[in-house]
Amino acid sequence: MNKLSAKISPSSGPQPVTIHLSTPAIEKDPQEQTLVQDESDAERPSKRCCARCPFRAVRKVTSGLILGACVAVSWAWGTNSAKETLIRHPAPFFIIWFCSTWNILFFPLYYLCHLLTEKQKQLPTTEFRKCSLFLGEELTVRVVLKGAAPFSVLWSLSGYLYLLALCRISKVDVSAILCCSQAFIFLLSWIGLKDRFMGVRIVAAILSITGIVMLAYGDGFHSDSITGVALGVGSASASALFKVLFRKHAGNVQPGPASVMLSCVGLCSFVLHSWVCVLLYFTHVEYWPPSQHIPWDKLCVMASLLLVFNVLLNLGGIFTYPSLMSLGILLTIPASAAVDTFVTETLQMSHVRAAAAGIISAGYLMLQLPENWDESTLRWINTLWRGNWREDSIGEEAVMDTAGIVRAKPRPAVVTLSGAYYEQTRFDSSVGVITS
Image (cartoon, rainbow, N blue to C red; front, side):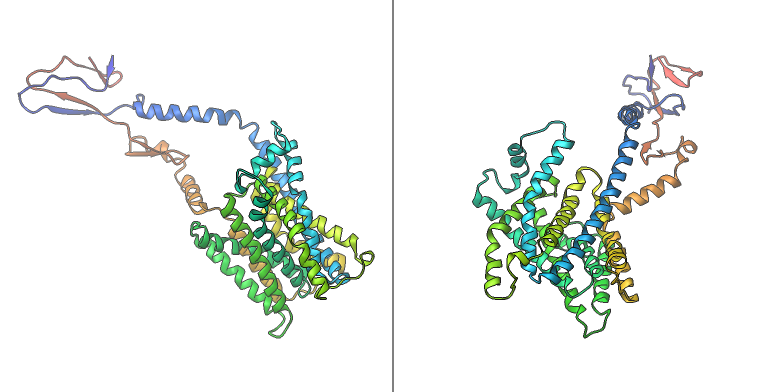
């Protein structure tokens, strides 16, 4: 039987002599063998599924690019319809109230996606209770209104300020300010949710604020664009506060809970905000003609496009990567510019506004970097640098393979010989180990 060390009996003679014999490359340490065996066992299922993973990844990326383009087109087209609706019907709160009631369709659309994607299909009531656990175990009208009413106020406030800003600035500027909402989300999450501090995101937030200042003073200090940009920033801030509070209330935002929340927001807007429309009408703050003169076609087109935008943004993670859906928000800037150029032919963008849009876009892309992007980059560079190091350093203290795993050097065999008594040992020179 092969052994790494020979046993000895205690002796009161002279101090034992220790002989270190290096383990040859053929024999491996038992711990290392166990580690390699575990790694090979862990890699086997991944190798078996590698034939399917590329196809799934390509399919997800393709779906993400298509859905991201749909997000940009729906926002640009919906913004254009909103501006035309405001010209024919200058009642921004009534318009946003009408569009908010369409959010009731969120959960039915989510359940339709559930039927198309999930193998184990559940009843609508069961799926609704599963997705609405963040509201409480017992769902009553009082619980739903209490949980969703503050979010409906933030939703309506964000939309109302968005329409007021659209009356004063261009669609491209409104789309650029929409991208700044991600910077406000980071700042609010860092302060309120104690998220991890990241220097690159602080730089991105500074770039976003710089772009906002450039948009505000692009036409001079006495222009109407300052008011429009301020209203747009208020809309983006209300939207960011909505998302941060929802994350604090429900945890990580998932498509199911998001659909339940937005459906409850639409219900609360229909029930609680109707009296605000009536109050504004009788006080002549917002006055509209009889119903037959209201542009219902434009209103329905705008409401449907904004619904598509929000559905893709909140439920698109079921079919693709969320980062690609976030890229669709950035594409709203060139999409709005394309609508102004080829549809309305009213694009007027100065060099300052173009530079501001570029700075905001750069900040938005920096905000999409993951939390461990620096560690991943250093690990990737380290892998490239030390890719072939393992083959050249077998006998060193530590061995690093291409995956970045540091393995301990094989332990030398130790033989303790006593002057008084020791077991009969012999050296097998062919394999270089001690046998008894």
